[in-house]
Length: 168
Image 1 (cartoon, helix red, strand yellow):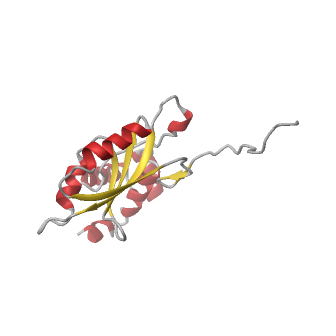
Image 2 (tube, rainbow, N blue to C red):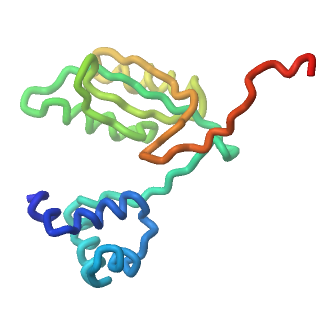
Image 3 (cartoon, rainbow, N blue to C red):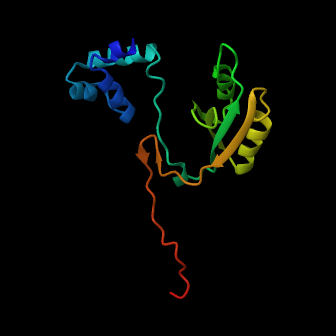
């Protein structure tokens, strides 16, 4: 079904919106060689069908006063018969600390990106909410020290001379 719908050339519309959700229907119509109304209708249809889920802005929070910590949590779980990993994944998604959750291949089952105000907040979330879930068998926490690229966007990294300034 998706390939039929996207095969019309409107898949380019989705790629353009994913790259820059600020583009107007008029701009998109010019880029796609179609009408504004066709673009508006396609966007409404994609939203109705759940293809377009949200419009987000990517913020470099390190350039603000906001204090927070991001961690990648590897999670091993016991899947449910007939439901696989979906039941436990849905439960984990309910926590506001969970920014992203993915089913993974390899040595663990799920990967969650967590945000908290401090290392302690993240550690408490893992210990008191995540690790105690009935279907969670183990977790491994990795704290993000610096973001260089997120969602295809490179962060500006100001290079610092790490060498000692002593004796200058």
